[in-house]
Length: 253
Image 1 (spheres, rainbow, N blue to C red):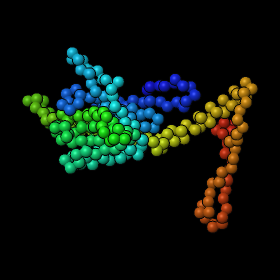
Image 2: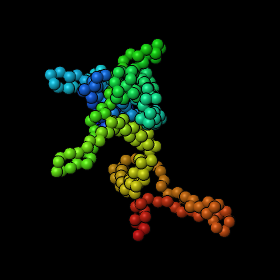
Image 3: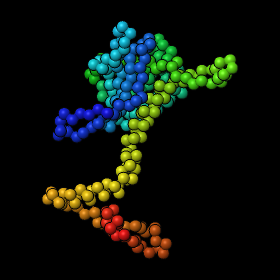
Image 4: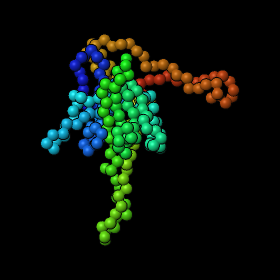
């Protein structure tokens, strides 16, 4: 996880790098790496050229190109990738734009290859001309399973997962737009609300002892537990109860 605390007056936005990333040193299109991170509610996809010298490979981050996708764009791109996988010959190029960038999946024909490529282009806002572009050529002969292994004659079959990298990219896109519903965040907060209430009560006591002024608030309020439909008698009456902190409940027993 990367941190940026240069300006203490700014809201803190963490940057989290995904472990889902790819590199293709053997590409006949562009020798590039594809990396993914999350920042400020965006999914950031970056394609970086590779610097290969004397057998060593280095990612050229200074000349990398990135696109920032919010949740709706992530969902659209995921759907485009799924439709592409269903019929790659029909759909030669599909993608989404964001800012001055366009990201698209290509079946490789435009580059003279047979394997799909993810293309990232930076486009001039006024002229529509492509300023910079990189392609990541998906590897289709790297990931495989072993089937029908015979320990006597050592024979076996390899089953290649040619679209695995595209499928993993779809997984990241799906996880991004699903995570931003905040449903999981709510469930975690809700599960820990009792501990949070205890900690808040203890903190208030410490502040009171130290003479630190606290913002006035009341946790006790009445909440309705019914509606017109919850009364089987048909009378429009509801019951209510008083809400208190967890410590108040503990002290009652």
